[in-house]
Length: 609
Image (cartoon, rainbow, N blue to C red):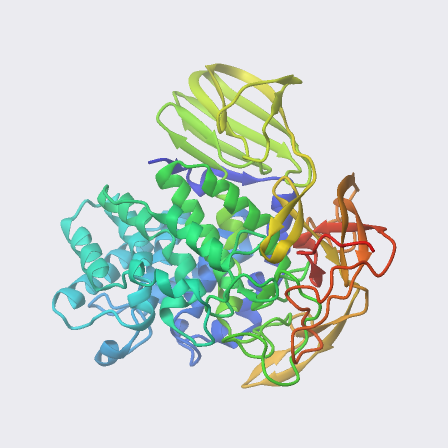
């Protein structure tokens, strides 16, 4: 098993730092000021939601605050954690629920706050957080052992999430009751192997066993079990292939609006599922060492994650659609299988507030996954701009990655040691790059470029990856344009309509109001050939800028008769009504999927008369 470096050893650089700054200046960084379910939560003595929303928010806010070294945000995180610890009962019960009502309280919140306390202790080393975590898990163990509580509902389907704080505690205090607790949770928890047949046929019914977020979380279940117990078969690759075949998207996610929804390009994928699938893939890589999970992680992080937020990250969608020609409330029956009519609009809490609270964890946890270690080696898992500062191999070592990847395919690695140190530097090469140049010379590699030597002082290594823009096949004989880890889509000219209002005591006011996105451009296109030309631009302050993307693909497209899904005038048909060209080919710029808000991504090869 590999291990990520401590997040306190990571310093952000370049576009990745800018992206986290945008997040901090947006909704996540201000949720405790403007959203009652966090601002006035029962977790800190208020009268609003006292279950998953504050822990969800802190799970992203804490690493965001510390990675940016933002003193104000760190103080606000501390305020919340201290308030939660202050309210912990002498028994160890920590959730905002009277102890006589514990039997009916869904223990999922206990797992979540355990993750938060472990995360906070990892960044701060504050003993109060560690002690609170210890008491909370011991109390959970005693309640379960005495049969005073049982797993039900969300906790039953998310039992493996508690393995994360259990593992954190067990690494520091090898006490047998922690393993007993883990076994009880596993025994009472849902067995997802029993549900796989249900994932093959999407249904218009809400179920916990086909719920997209549950499934994306569960992808790491065997990995966290193996990490704790040291034994477990990892069948996630098989499960991934099944989900991809029946519910996969062009950006490595699975459809789920809110339960599994098939392979149609106009079905939705929930934001919580995007973040949780990324986190699962981080766990799967670190436990198995298989770099395929990093390829999939990058595809999600650079495409699906940014696409579901406005560029300033003040608003988000509950679900995104790969082919999305409108993002306004449906006038009649919702198109989505189990979501309401506004799940795809951009807003404060469209459809449901879980994604509002949980939207922040994706980028910070990605940033802390860039460097890993194993015996005798430092691993650069992803080509992302950041610096590792660590003491290892008898020296103070820094490894700095300067790059604009994935928008460019070059990177400069600077290794600096204050005394001679022998170790391997392993640089993962994404699977799309079949060749790699090192300091201008082509080199052989096998998943990693490995440099094994005695390092002394400063040394720079220039890396260049290679890929050709190309079309990749999708269901229904459609195609998607790709280059490297980026998917490209046809951007649709959009008019943003601001919707300000108050509902249930929650204000929607600019910049955190709701928006309807109206289509004001042509979208009915198909590829006229498979030629794609890449162009690079200067870009702007937003890494995933809609107005000024730093990389584009020029494609030859022709108009066709797409048509709409039956009964809707704002949902494109999942397959075109006709593939016959209605116009001569036009050269049109496709931009990164993550930069688009309204888009056509999967398109056919057109036929000419």
